[in-house]
Image (cartoon, rainbow, N blue to C red):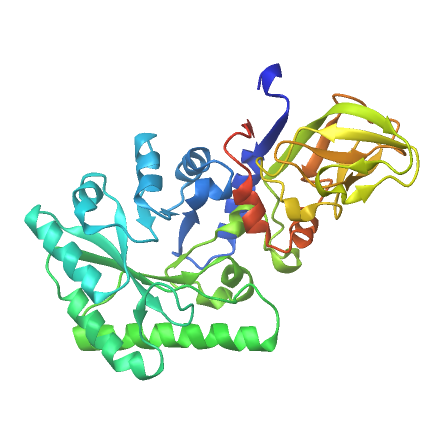
Length: 376
């Protein structure tokens, strides 16, 4: 990073990502595959860099949200299997075939469209079938009164020509949340998932090569649900390790600098909306980070950041490109001093709690204009 970029940046620890991969993998059953979720630019960490690391480390699969994300990886030399978790319009089947990308199929109508498109191209599209077991999002309906119809639709899907049925999966809604109700809901989802698979395999005289349902929460709390492959997302980046069982390490440190320091007398309004007024003579620092960089405006007047000598309270409304902090009692912090927004010295979860959101959102929110600096 050159000096012109020293406004705000995100430090990404590739060694920590590798450590997390190895720690998660070490706890898996023998033969269980590892799918690294690198959608949303690897949760803000940089999809290409993270995918290269996982490919080199021996991961089995990658998952992205959409075709554009998959193509970015292929264009940057990532050759390992890639699963698109979301929908791809069937008119892009040729691209899926050409780039050897696996597509999720979440309904019979979509399966028919892919089968027809692949047949016209003289190819066979590799797919993973998704079941809706309680997330109420994408997937074949199969819960309750939909069970029999869901199984029938799946049997028709696996019998279609021009599709290579490699996998079947579902997604847990509350595997990362505590409490008996959440545990019971996750176990019910898992039972429905395995019941549907058993019915389809028995009636269809076939077997799904890869069954997967364990997202980050299940990897930690329900290791018996690993089956043939696990799909850690946030866990890979060092968050969501309930109780620190796996010893994971956060992989991103968001840093900015003090650009200006000014002194204000008592009774001075600070920033938009006059939502903070000084109660004493205040040494106020201006930081080069705002909501356009990924610092939520909702955190205004609720958080503090790590600076030389301690923690500085954020004051006034967070602006698009800047925000202010109280440095009155922090004489070791000067113009040019580094300020950690989150990282080893300032827990991301404190920031996400203040923003009334989850760590996922804040990692993904770090904008493209914030340079990523990779530590090897």
